[in-house]
Image 1 (cartoon, rainbow, N blue to C red):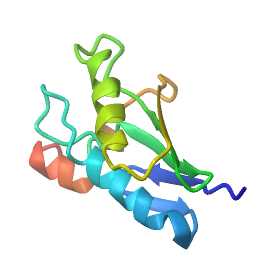
Image 2 (spheres, one colour):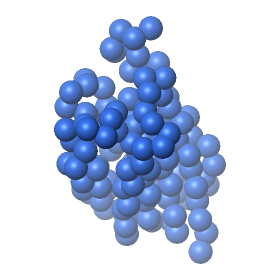
Image 3 (cartoon, rainbow, N blue to C red):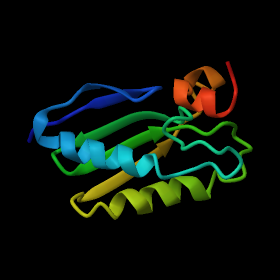
Image 4 (cartoon, one colour):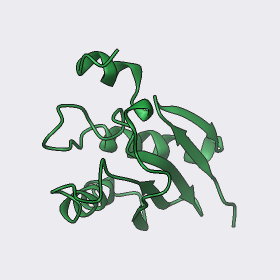
Length: 121
């Protein structure tokens, strides 16, 4: 079994990975860009909430993420929404979403597009 690991850095730069799972990684990232924190008009990917996207064994997605704060009102619902939407890709045998608090989220993790959208320059 071949393991593919890709780490997503703020702004959407992807490192690692192999060609065989690149289309799944792209599909997962596209789904993440369709998810929003309801209090912030920027998708969670460009907001910098996604720390890692990994495709293991060719069809198992692992997403490591954070939230803007532990008291975020969507702390319980957003990870479930993400898992459900990523599962809808259909070519994945399993999806795991792990919420971590270290390192804590800071506005510096946002992409340039997100900073422009929120006038944070």
